Length: 174
Image (tube, rainbow, N blue to C red):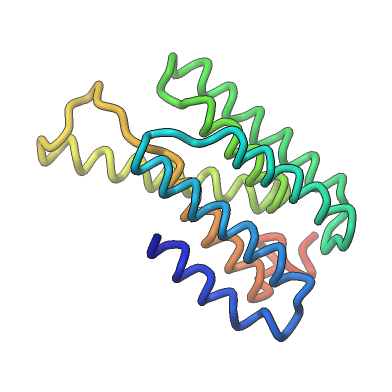
């Protein structure tokens, strides 16, 4: 839950500057915090939570878009599709909840920023898994929760977007 508290506190600075960005960001960070908690506690990413988050993302994209709603849809298709392919080829190494979470991240961040979040999550998870294998704390066939890595990477990319870094899909991005 500390991820959630820290992320919401970091978002607070934007709350009064531009509420049109702060409200969706706070909702997204809340979902990411809850998904992280449930995956760490129960090794489960609840479908209902992701469905509500996806519906919220679509409503936000249509109601007051910082980017066109088509970008949100394309982001969901790209990230969800990549995650689905990885789940198929990894033969169970990536769960269905992680695939759906990737699609929700694509809805909120769009295809470019979402792709960076997905890449960052896989790099961080790979480094952590490597460290656990080298230290002999885990074995090669042990599973690990991926949603926390996806959530942290998405929160980092969102933060970079909110501070206006164009490369991360913020204002002025191509």
